[in-house]
Amino acid sequence: MITDPAPARPTTDTEPTEAGVGRRGVRRRVVTRVVTALAAVLVLGAFTLPNRPWQLEPGALMRIPLEALLLAALLLALPGRPRRVVAALTGALLGLVVVVKVGDLGFYASLGRPFDLVLDWSLLDEAFTFVAESIGRPGAIAIALGVGLSLLAVPVLTALSTVRLSSLLTRHRTGSTRAIATLVLVWAVLAVFGVRIVPAMPIADTNASILVQEHAAEVWDRLSDRQVFAKEVGVDPFRDLPADQLLTGLRGKNVLIAFVESYGRSAVTDPEFAAIPRMLDEGAGRLSAAGFATRSGFLTSPTIGGASWLAHATLLSGLWVDNNQRYRNLLASDRFTLGDAFRRASWRTVGVMPAVNQPWPEGAFYGYEQFYSGPDLDYQGPRFAFAPMPDQFAIHQFHQRELTGARDRPVMVELSLVSSHSPWTKVPSLVEWDAIDDGEVFRRGIIGTPTAQARTGYRHSISYTLRTLISYAETYGDDDTVLVIVGDHQPAPVVTGENPSHDVPIHIVTKDSAVLQRIGDWGWQDGLTPDAKAPVWPMDQFRDRFLTAFGPTPDRPRAQGR
Image 1 (tube, helix red, strand yellow):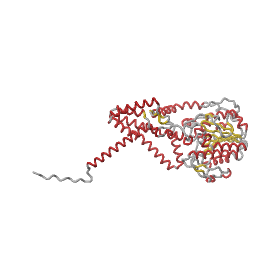
Image 2 (cartoon, rainbow, N blue to C red; image 1 turned 60 degrees about the horizontal axis):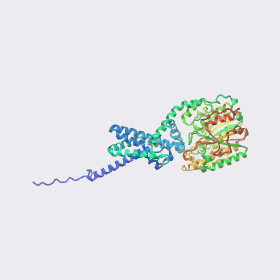
Image 3 (cartoon, rainbow, N blue to C red; image 1 turned 90 degrees about the vertical axis):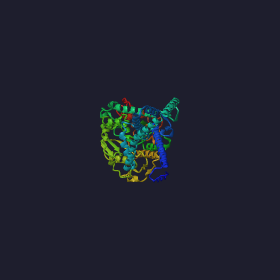
Image 4 (cartoon, rainbow, N blue to C red; image 1 turned 60 degrees about the vertical axis):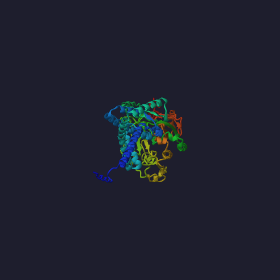
């Protein structure tokens, strides 16, 4: 019997067709391959990412990391579950290595050194404060959240990527084994001949291992440095000297020690900043016409690009303070500082720090009887990027409060100037000293510089602060004035370029020839522009040399620096 065929069931829009299934399969395979490729790029990039800004170029990523080959071989040798566990753990560790590299990149760009895994966490708060004062607190919070989430995501992504790639290796075990063996052979040949695309970065790469070794060694050094530093603190030939044996060569002098923010060797040697030494030469000429003599040299700062407090502590304590652990241990000690020496010898000791906006107990450690923070100076004018007030205003307020009227003691002051602090986008103009008043006058003549022109802004700001100090000496300096001008550190590498020196200029300005005779054996050069032949001392030697030169016995044996 012939029956009618069953009628075809009509398809609906919700039921899959062979064509639809095929298209989805193609899309799935494409997505899978793209994700796998991205995972491979992420893992390879994590191994080969440089940790120094000047090495960031495409050729730096075109390397063969030995660690990646060894990891691939290990994963191939492991069975399923252990392989996935090892892949996840090593992937997460690789992500942490990336975080350290990013930290190094940031610290090399700003401070000219790698990230310190033990000590630099406290600087994150300083960085947040700097950003907040430069662009506002909401912007700083947004940036902090973005950076934090990104850094948390990196280990997760590298772990997932490594697990994914390990599965790919085992699915193609024979081909993977041959590829790894071939790449190991190629790596060995390239290593023997030292082939490289980027200078100092061989294609046969072991960068990740070296990075881990260097940071591990630094962690060990930091943990063992407490005892070393404690011994250094205890060695001090000046701590027990009586008042009549301290600073006798400066009796009756007002001594001003002015730290100029970011004033480094580059400011007087870089051809692009030639306007600065020209200005200094002109200033030295004007000071000479006013009866002043000037001498200059260089000191080597313990820091670069920031952390000014380390330089201040080093110069004033006579100890090498190049990290926050040493700084905290110094503050907890009874080290005899320059401020202590002046105070014991009957000077009135003063600290002026316009960038400080809260109580500063460190002033007692440095021996200051009077401390002026930013709010204490009653400034009513505009803010200048990071600087809450112009240096000229801070200096003027100090002078009016401490050096006018009747005084029964000479004054020693530390002036921590900030107008030349990055980001150098707004610089004040020098005004007449008698027109300063509450600072409203500084709303006129603001020099604005785009953030992208950091070197131009830097030149303007350093010139401004140095002109201010020269003008102050011309206007208010007298026979009893001794002005010491010193840079705290070089600016960030965005200004100096890679691998800059740590040297900073130092000058002394006085009308008293007897003061200069005391430092005659220092070898400092005439004028305000030290050249390449000027002497260079480690900054921690300044305190002892200064106390020796101006003590009653200038031939006292000098305590050695580092």
